[in-house]
Amino acid sequence: MEETVIVAHKIFKAFGEGETEIQALRNVDLGIKRGDFAAIVGPSGSGKTTLLNILCGLDNVSSGEIKVSGRSLQEMSGSELAQFRREHIGLVFQAYNLIPVLTVLENIEYVMLLQHVPAADRKERVHTFLAELGLEGKENKFPAELSGGQQQRVAIARAMVSKPDIILADEPTANLDSETGGQLLEMMRKFNEELKMTFVFSTHDPQIMERAKRLITLTDGRIVSDELK
Image (cartoon, rainbow, N blue to C red; front, side):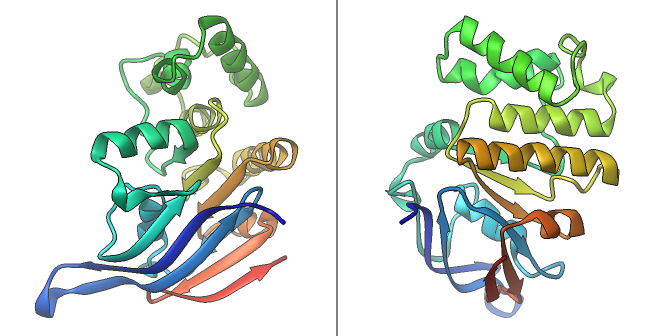
């Protein structure tokens, strides 16, 4: 039986108070198993990004509990959460979030530096990912010197290079052309199948929905279907 790496129990999330309160998530129960390649889908405003942010502790729940790799996120301090994310979760954002004063190589190896991975291992892993992503020769470029597609590839390499248990990706192909997006998704699927890396996407992209092994549909903050393909 596959290990459940994320457990969300009765997750409720509201923004604002009283008449201005917006209920973003309503009593969501969700389990993500090791090796899942799952897409959270649904209309804009359905709660996809909020759920993804809660699953990694970037946003707090109003009520309910999140456990990741057996640890309750609600019981961790801010510094404990940051360290836990570094060790267990890779994050890919629609806005890239690259560090502008660092080169491609430095951006990709940044998390491994925080993890105290030896220099030789860092170099080997970075160059492997650069080759996988078609970024050879870009090691010393800065983010501003790259196209949007290249920046997203660097962001994905940074998230995956430390080999985390889980990758959470918020609309990772939104700023990419269909060919580049397809290439990145095939690379992600390869890591999913070969390394049992767990992927959870929030997306509107048909390419991700087609490749996903599991579709979780949110409507008005509730899971209305959860289907294995």
